[in-house]
Image (cartoon, rainbow, N blue to C red; front, side):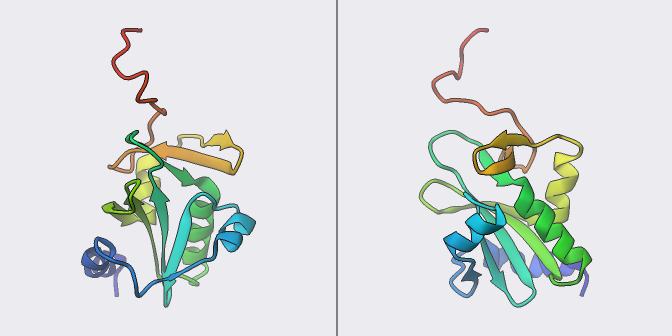
Length: 140
């Protein structure tokens, strides 16, 4: 099955409750360097879940998790990986295949943080600079 057809089939499922997907434990995500992102799997499909931590409009996406998912696809351990965005209350916002997310990120270097390398992305999965809600609208 092509990844486009698989992505379309999973679209409705990823936009709702994901009860049928098994989570990686928080200690496992920390050990792998994926934290604060969470990861879930179902068979040979998996997704990285990015939760917005506050009213700002960006999400942090672990560069390590992204690279690990891409490598798992290349090694045929996964047939499809996704990135799923949820708001601060856990409500679905958007999802995309890991390949499409990486196309949008392009050659942008990840930021370095206390949990490892990451990108700030918007709801379109495009890399952005972090914006504090306190600084919105300042003239310079």
